[in-house]
Image 1 (spheres, rainbow, N blue to C red):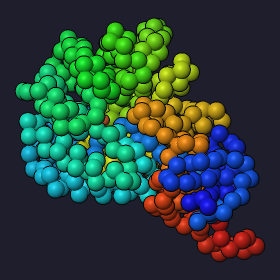
Image 2: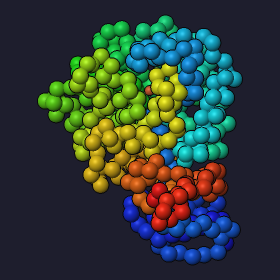
Image 3: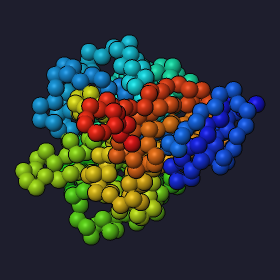
Image 4: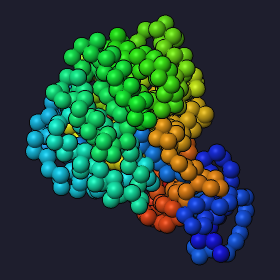
Length: 422
Ligand code: FE2
């Protein structure tokens, strides 16, 4: 007797009428048309069953703090950093924990079951680190929270920056972060990339740096990140987040840069909602979009993910924990409108970030964790178009969230009485 059987599912790769058999929290079989006795059977009725959404780039220590102590008037990255600096002295452990738990509730309801969150390590108290380590433990039964030691104020620029970051790793933070474009000089930025990659190599950690989050076409720290990755043999374990300067770079230089990034098997995270909002703020018209070169990087064979980055915090006044919203924006900003490109946008919020995080047992295949989402959509393209409702969310074979299929009443002459949006 199976624990759970999903029938008549459409999978993201296009296979239809698939059954997913679950036993003891793992998928045991994925076969067309399988019928078998189970404690619970769910008929997907031809709708899409996807592995859960994964957010490769988020800030859970600042989320849901919008308006505290004021809003970001200029809308720039730098005012956001200054504003966060004003908020930090007033933070409490309990307030961070409560906001983060609230965010994770929303995330689970959206089918978002794995998040890589940066956590600010700049201050000696490591208050955000302690708080998010507690959150990581509390949400572990239903959400994988991976933490990145993020020296928001600059690892070299802030007093004790490197020591604080190392202490965060000692406490159990998973990944080494950085912010080279915020160090005092370009030389310091380069030095920070080198020493942080060396630290990661020494400790066997992954790296995920905020890198070149700027409209400055000469911000080229990603070149150093790729170089250090290959020098230290960190291939496949290093991610460059944002890389917005690539949007503005000279095309000839990019034609040299992308192969170097490929050689290092660098991961890339674009944050479309935030990039389109924060970048281009010093432009008049035309205004740059600021998102890195997603289709070109994908075409070169790099693993590219879309992150959410911010929800209601000093940098962003919107957001909803919906990775389909990030994919929707990425599709538009990157003009990724072919059928293949739209499907790549879906991969950018599922399989690709799962690879960057190094998630074990991710996917819909025998042996994988029984984690999946039933979407009110017939395929990945429709899921993005509709920001489809999550009809059911399963974690280790247990249903942890769900909502009814959306429908609206219609009162039109000669037309049906309702519409389902599909
Ligand atoms: Fe970020």
